[in-house]
Image (cartoon, rainbow, N blue to C red; front, top):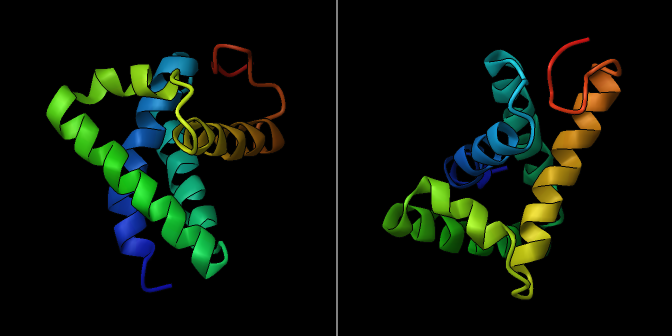
Length: 112
């Protein structure tokens, strides 16, 4: 679990950006909880997978620091191998958690 703090700094803000874009009605406290859950789940991946995710997350964070956080969404729409899967991984973990914990959540993320 030594990589968990690194993963948090690499993935958390990306997950928040994605959630704020995809589900604008999601309350901020829920957004933070979901992003934290996503990072925790990535932290328990098998070592080789966790290292691969961390390497991609590092590139994504570098891209965001150079191009700006809003441009991150452009990168999420590319068909570059592994990068598209990285964003799909974040989305799938996040969405599954949201609709499992709050099943009445509307499609924009607002509470029912």
